[in-house]
Length: 214
Image (spheres, rainbow, N blue to C red):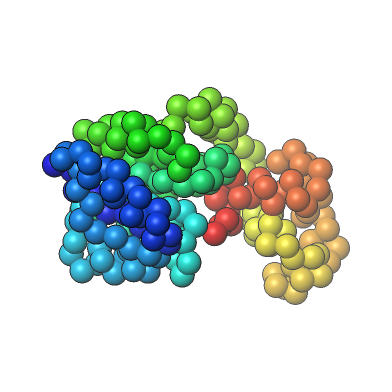
């Protein structure tokens, strides 16, 4: 029997998944949480399901934040992200933090069971239609790591602040340098990472985990 926990802020979603899975005697939903804080409290109390079905969008502490916290506890459960998000950025972020599975909420029960069984057996499971784009982005990300390595520490500091929406004057005050120097850093950084504007720079920073998306 595979012991499961569901963390989702929608009670009907949790109940629906539980009822569907428990029609099969091989699955038991033993624990539920309505947000990330409650999820971590249950796990910090020593409860250890085999697999945590984790939603990304939850109040108080979202699923990506829960993933980060799971790395701080002993013997954490395996995690399958179960979400409406098919945006590849969320998947990339989840993969970087560490997940065992990632499927969409509009998947059918067969896909959910397939993911659970694979993860329980020690394998990983990413919804098949997401894999081609994930692979392309991972290749691109590896290329971007080479570009990132060309930046100086100060240029990385500037890039982070640009990604946070700071203007040159604010960056200058934050770093204790002149606006002219900031402008030069921004120009050099744009050339090195191959972007044309601040929005593209912010996306580059998010993709490379320089700033959080949650």
